[in-house]
Image 1 (cartoon, rainbow, N blue to C red):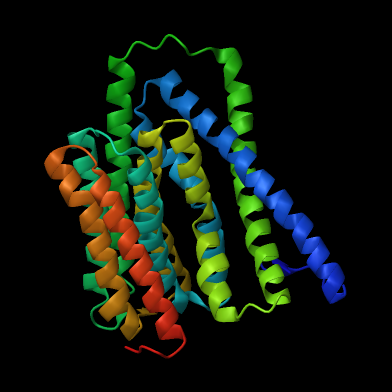
Image 2: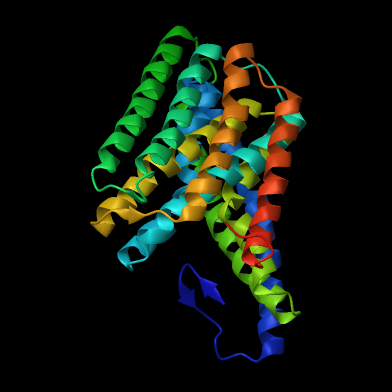
Length: 336
């Protein structure tokens, strides 16, 4: 089994390896569930204590924490000379976050948003995806493109800082107690670590168990591994839904997607030192699907000032069709 790129338990027999994998799967499941509770509770407390809107906290603090595994994996891949996979992975992750995770969130708990706040962040999200698509039309992402994408990321962060300062200045904050700060920070860090390590345990042990019982690598790749890359965001979203924190959930998804496209991907390009090649399937399929998903999530919300359940169902439908095509393409039944 591999954990964060390191192979462990290589000398065990198949039966012993399956037993270890089963134990680690249970441990991983417990860690992501409990870590999700600590994580969301701490983030919600931070928003209430500081007066910063929960959407902003979700789009910044929570998003950075949940995208940490992707950042580490992407940077390690770039350093090992595999940065050419970065674009497909980034766009695939954004599509999964938007269609599956936001879809689940909106079906379970659609609601009103601040049109002014969401319009800017949603617009930046759409601009980031359109920007990568346009920059890649030549068959690669140019070496100068990170500066354009970083400009979008900088605008996103500046808008969050300004909005946070205004909200904190305008709201009366009664619940903030200094004695709570160390424990809340501790549980936020522990919650983040639990989600990250728990997700790694689930993905690695799940892959081992699936292989051990004869499930094909293709099916494993499009189920266990595909879900695993978005597991931190999914756990955070499901926990936020259970605790009725819809703004935290949506903010996390929007923020994670912007970080994926405007921070992580440019860093990979800089480390790679050359233009990142873009495959034909990315241009004719992955990018259009991602743009369509972003449009469904963002444009109606800006117009109406609220999320609708139909958006959630539409996003989940796009996810199912997207995954079905990937499986058919991988097995050679359909090709582009």
